[in-house]
Length: 177
Image (cartoon, rainbow, N blue to C red; front, side, top):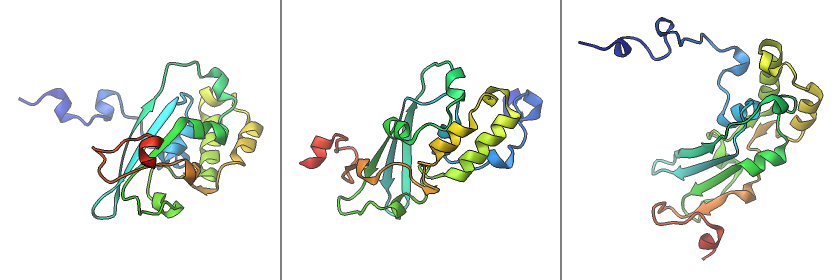
């Protein structure tokens, strides 16, 4: 006999968790774009990008979010870019001979599009009461420091490690040896 949950989709209308279709402004946002518009801000994010044999990157990571009162944050979303640099760590696992360029990250969840973030926040301000106190002037001034399309993290802050991820270390000192 099949259980009730195996007959219904996880997010189906029948089990009360169907949320419907997302508005166009909130569809297909990358991980970092979602972090920029979230009321519950992460304290640290770690991404590990590993170059596979086929040339495709595999990514995995951790996000730490502690309980917080989102009220004061709602007025100052989009976070300033220097705060985003403090929250995100990127570890590139691959050959030391691999050049790290902006093209290396073209298909990763680390890309952002400034105009998409602004449109998403404007939509949330109009349609979500939790975002009603959002200061659009502060958002526009913080958005000016973000790239129009690209990775918001300086390439020199990316930690490199060798292709043997199990035997390598993530510390700067170990990579210098």
